[in-house]
Image (cartoon, rainbow, N blue to C red; front, side, top):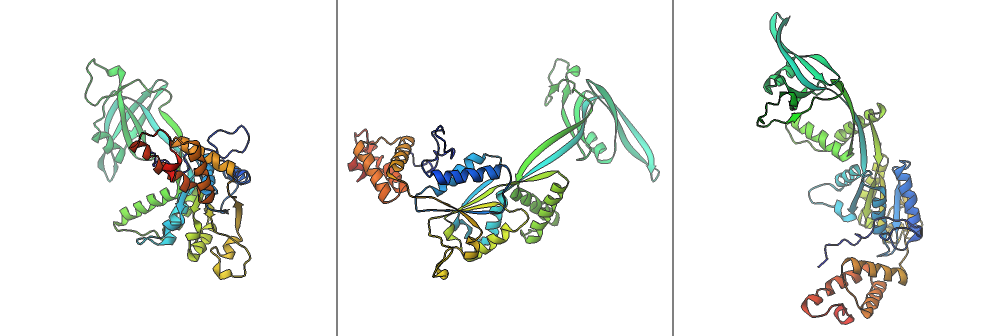
Length: 401
């Protein structure tokens, strides 16, 4: 049975024009237009630290709209999705879990420039010098060559020791990274091929270009990944378990700020989507407001099927604090009409390979209208098992009942 299918697995975009692909969100034209504006602002990096509230009745496509936004943004922009009840844990503080999810929703693009020497070893000279306290200091003179030239390098200290430990010899093709103090053997030159393949040998042609090379790379990660690396290195140095405190978070933020100032990195503002946000308590909303005022806040999208009022006779009964609601941009979704319900039930039935009769299809649409779409589709999936127990080829209304 196809119970593993996601409720929103058919959604790949939220386009609203007539020639939009088939796997688009059904209905909710105004909400989709608003969502496309959000997508455009996020892609252009023009919005951050904002709260957007998806408000509407049960089964009106709030979660589907958020997942459609994630599909439109693509894999390069972080999108973290949680349920409002997930932050309550017996082992961790809810504020810590909420902050970690926010850090996962903010990306970081690092620009790194690597300088290294790469070539074929043409000759090796082992030498000694008496420059340090009149004691012999060994070093190596290595001659590297490429198709466009050669270069003489002097290896001291750790590079000398690594060269000796790797037992490198004439004809090997190596890469030396002076900044990282590393030497890597890439293979052996084809000019030294004797006809017999040696064990663990990889024969390569002589490297092209100059011996000294520069290479620019772009590495993408989230702030949560950078936090993890920083905490791991701190624990390793101190050999004790280090808790994730505000001080360590501030160290990472300072590091990122320095990278951005030196133009070595840029922030990618992503989205944190909290479904069923009415499960959050006032303490969580207060802490979320603090996060939104931090140096690197995400864009927060909340979804709720509860009624939200800015003005109420009974403010103590409000689920969302009035101060928090005042900073929200609201996108409202409406209840689906009969035509849209029929399209969704038909689409999900084809996806789950549920073969429905005409009366069964009408009954499922009626159930979806009176109850919810999820209940109707789930009922069709369970009823589909009757086909395997009887000789029926399609689901009928009796199977549904």
